[in-house]
Length: 104
Image 1 (tube, helix red, strand yellow):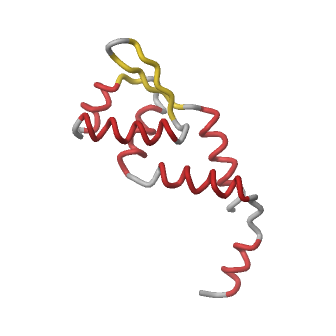
Image 2 (image 1 turned 180 degrees about the vertical axis):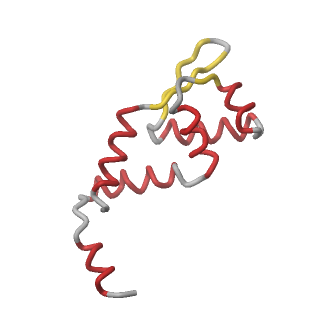
């Protein structure tokens, strides 16, 4: 590794709150199924049952991935009993993009 590469890291201007937010967001996005879920949801709102059929994963697995994305703020869930409708949280996506902007 060159010192040039390391010096680039010194140029990142994140405070500790931003570092924590970026780390939490990266952790939430750290699984391919979650990325696929966000891609699907970026096309519009979707029912949980539709997501299960789209991804071909078990309902419990999808639910866990959705929980992680929801807790990270990337998606919103609106209960329309007996179903839940999921959608992208545009404010969270904007914040994540801004944090990524600090990196390069």
